[in-house]
Length: 102
Image 1 (cartoon, one colour):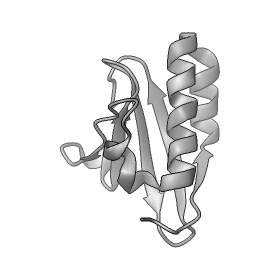
Image 2 (cartoon, one colour):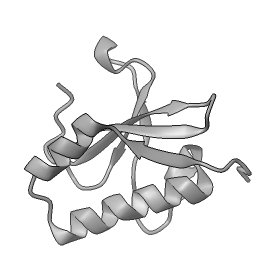
Image 3 (cartoon, rainbow, N blue to C red):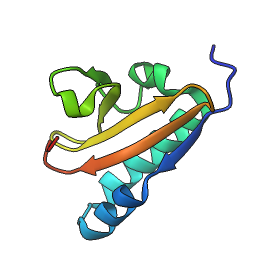
Image 4 (tube, rainbow, N blue to C red):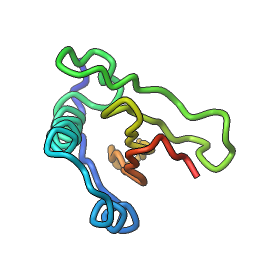
């Protein structure tokens, strides 16, 4: 069990992208559930979440996303984030509906 107190921070660039993107109510609910789950259990427990399959994994193929992770919130939607262990923060850098890592 992860006893750390996790905090999820969404970058300003990601906030702007969220404002420009049309998400369904279901997608918004799943993203909010992802945030709550990470704050309570930590990011290393995402694949243990039984309600949704986040398919959380490291991003290793693209140099741009070195030290980042990706979680699915829909068939093509992704939450791209990194973990700052020094201050126990999960920093969400991108939320995309179309599996776009560019």
